[in-house]
Amino acid sequence: MEVNTKREREGKSGGLALKKSVAILELVLRISTATAALAATLTMGTTEQTLPFFTQLLQFRASYEDLPAFTFFVIATSISSGYLILSVPFSVVCVVQPLVPGPRLLLIFCDTLTVTLLTSAAASSAAIVYLAHNGNSDANWLPLCQQFGDFCQRIGGAVVAGFIAVALLLIMVLLSALGLTKH
Image 1 (tube, helix red, strand yellow):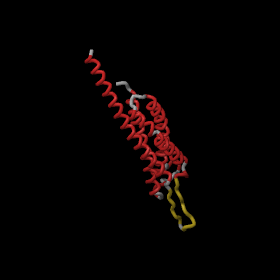
Image 2 (cartoon, rainbow, N blue to C red):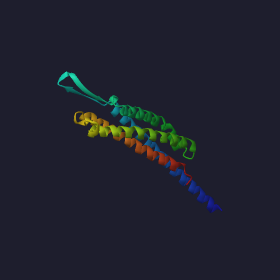
Image 3 (cartoon, rainbow, N blue to C red):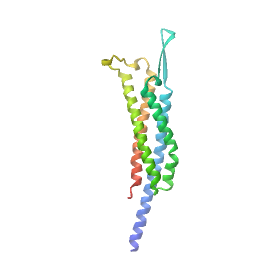
């Protein structure tokens, strides 16, 4: 009888250690994801390039505000960044009390919504970045990146940072689900 209770205690302490390790990893990923989303927001939001055309009076300007997909990207990544920063205290609660399921359930729900928002923003922006690099001969759209090289590099980098945030968020959702398991 005493052997079973000793094994049960060892199993519970091992499960507690696993849940605590998962919660710590999730906290580190949450901070990393917030950093990636914030970098994507700032990079896209500050991207602008102006090219002179014949004289200084006539200039061509490219800005993220010119394309609705990029505006959506900036709004979505800023919302996601704000959420991820505000969710850090809940993640700390999951580290301190790994057996309490409430905060973890809340984080899974909100993280899943955030994954959806970030994925749609990054995917729509990736389509525009593709058009900027390659154009579309059927629609007579010329590649924009031939003239606005710096602009295209920055928007491409912002979209990559957005997809990194999506990947990290997906890993966080999986870890949260693992943290909810009983064994």
